[in-house]
Image (tube, rainbow, N blue to C red; front, side, top):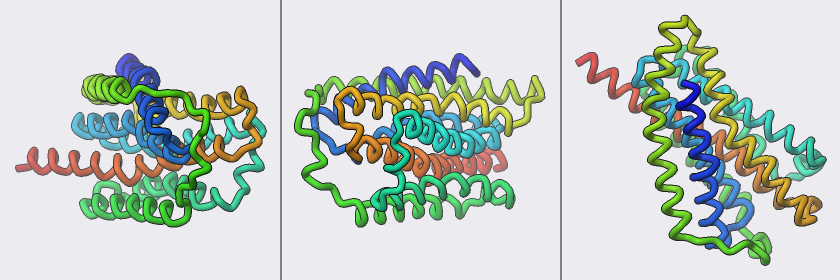
Length: 267
């Protein structure tokens, strides 16, 4: 389980994130766009873990991976903000909706598990609708501005970025298959509770967010732009994009796969 999880993290860090960086530089994305796409990319391990865990018969472990990952992401973001003394930025009104959605995404899976409703079929369209609502609100309240584009952005290689990202996704998918089976074996043979296994996976799959949060502020500091809001914008959109993708995309897709397999097995 540890080897498979490590393989996923390394594929995200050195493959998927670097591929996105090349694409973002080539297309001159804004700080907000970079943050959101990075957030979606760092949710790929949670998607693979949830689907593989559900298919292996340990749905609760996969779902707790999402719940714990969202909590850990918020903690890591807070540590990065404190480390680089950017706490004041979080009180800017422009970030209110992102912070609200990031926090709300923490409570959704936990409340559903507490109520025993986490495998209801109607959650698939409801949670996807929740994600669409988030995107609509975000697009209305945070319209892109021309000045957000970096004038001295690094030059990226679009074809290389696309190839690197695709190879990383294939590696993540293969490692995820092994991860689901290994997690099921750990839960069954060692008597580890699914909740504990989910928290272990949550810590591991949050490492890409840890790297990206601190990398954003480190790059801003080296460029002498810590006084700007673009670094916090990118890091916060990374957090919100990751948490909302976990709840509004990863959760319903994983649940759909789990319910379909359960139905076929029952049939």
